[in-house]
Image (cartoon, rainbow, N blue to C red; front, side):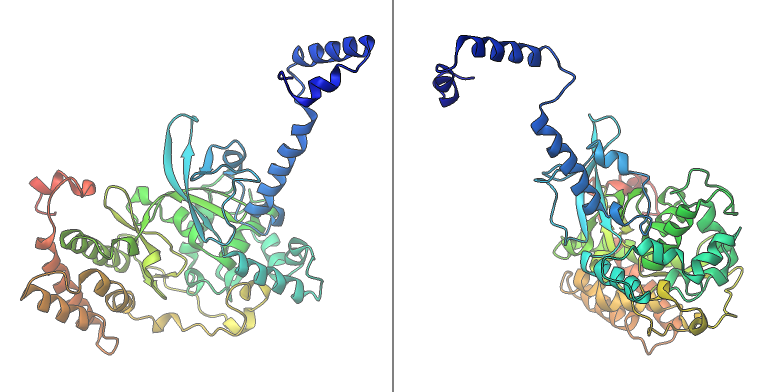
Length: 433
């Protein structure tokens, strides 16, 4: 004890035998490093339990997975300016969190931690599960989901077929093809032996996690089956823990609405290019957005624009076609109602126009980047092309032509300097840039 403190003064009144016992006990404590002070044990256990609840691990296997949990508990994933501890966890109402990720505890890189749903949406979803079985609010949601007819079919299935996902509300599964579903199973990163189109290596837990993720938010699935390493405009999927997923970090597009004109032109040009690649690609998948907002797109530190949130991204297989022989109304169950409710009517696959994503982006995002940025007559030409691109009443060819014209206008407005690291110094020597 430090000199002058109350406990030392009190020790003066102890008898000599008592003082000897105290000294002996202190020496034993100091010479035994294996045992931490008892007062610290509850703090460590409290931190771990609180972390489980925060991450949603207490709700598994109605969750995404556990592939990256060890990094959370080893503090190799750290929330910005705080650690995963009772005093350092960020607020639980945020949809995403900036964080840092390490493979060796020495070098760190920026990542982003996303919730599968907001806390409020998860509460509503969990309540719907309990209500579906007339259970109390504190029911075992996993037990109820396991007893459903859909999951019992999944347990017997060797392959993920279109009838097993019929009625799920996700745009990804609105028009399922066998080729797309085989890709989901073959590239599902939350199982140890990915690579087969058959689910023989899936445990019951694995099947429930995949089904739950497909029913609630297919963003983590899209990151896995269309990885950025293969040229798809999506960030890298690093893993999941409970109801969170971790991916490489991007800055939301809305942070660039006041960017300089050359940077705004570059981002708008990239955004049009992304939509073009989603419409036409080597795998013959047609991707379309059911809605857009600025938070769905993000920019890496090198200036490259990617899709930050793919939850509203639908996929139609142009090569194989879609299986639509099952009536959606006949395939609705609790898994169909976890997010949007059971009354949502989804349009037919044949009703999705090629222009859909372009109209949404030209109407809601590109004006925020491009209006009032350039000198006449360039600005007037851009505004005219934007207006035509964003008109839903125009035909597909008219909207596509307006978007192509707008992209051609933006190309020479971009500058070639190190701020755009994703294309520098290539832009000095390659006409592509």
